[in-house]
Length: 516
Image (tube, rainbow, N blue to C red; front, side):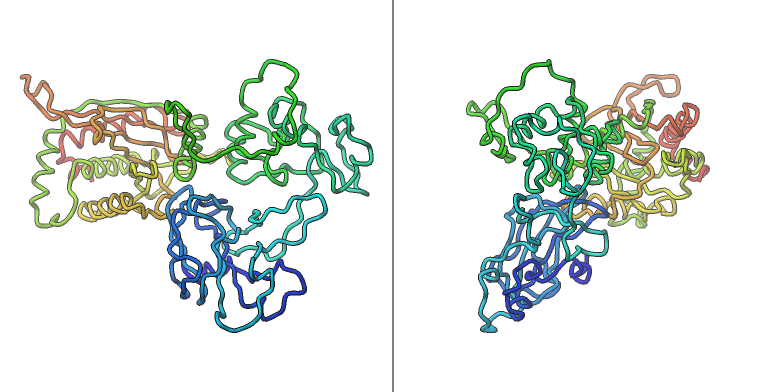
């Protein structure tokens, strides 16, 4: 991400201050907002700050590293000046569009700083009476166009109404001990006790009809609800400003509890926030780890894939002794000098040849159009285990690469993943994937498809085993391959032919020449 792109997400810190702030002070302090660093992602975690208040910064200087659901990214500042304030600590998850750092672009100018400049508040418009101000609230952002300067007014929450506006909410949505005057007051809201009870019974109480209002939810939450078959209109939101959260969606799919009178909930208990950090009980027998970043995205994607695409997995055990001999020969070949040569390289090449012979397997399912989309290119994904979780970067146009080019691309992919520098772009638009579980000593597995792909090949450990070779039992290098595929677009015949071709090539590597 360039400094020019980052500049679109910044604005004057004075945008939300009072009219009494002088023009000089308004232009002096600039704020930098969390940009959308990964095509529609809505939040990112601040991993590390490289600057502190009082440090000098230059246009294009990296000031922090953030982790999205796809990768770790460094953010450059688009200003010259001195760091005035860091709005969030390391380890904090921040919504896209929220101000994360302010910069004094005219240090030493001698201009008097107003109270708002000395203790800058987030650029938010004045809130109506009775609404809670949120210092780092989510500001609507359009991908690639920065953050809007003016705050967008949200629609009224369920259970409240605005004078002069006719709503379809029944009287039952207002607690029985609430007066009629408070039910129509624009500053009133559902009591904390009622909100806590609704949260506890979320997804099981009768929904409050709101025919004129579309449920508020972020795109990932909408996709999760679609994957789980949950109607957002039936969910009572518990997030800020009436936003439906992931927890609300999961709660709607949970089994209904026994019908009992809800326990009394005090306003103090309902308003007390729950801890989100790592929690260990007093006995040291359990540890709770918040799921976020790559692990959170992986969990959501795997649930969506497992319950959307009908998986079929087939297995084949084969003799790869000749392939292992070819690997040793290639390591000493001058054309492969300095490149990473291992069995995975030849497995990848064998899969690419099999896809060339059976291009129908390189496809995806278009749910909206009810069509099978066959890809005439192969972006080969390689599953990589990293300290931040499992990621699947892919080699673009792998089908056009020679063996040395494929080896070079594989080496770069693995090195980048280990360093935690895999970019979001390298993990998008994959078509098929290889996962090498053999490096952990595992014989095979039943891998789950990467969302949007039609097949994934698991490669097991290569071990010396007794094998019938030329009529005699001899020790041979043996492994097991497993191919999972989407049965909506890949039938058993096609999947079997692809797996059989990969096995045939690894048993007789000369087929890399005759079949290619």
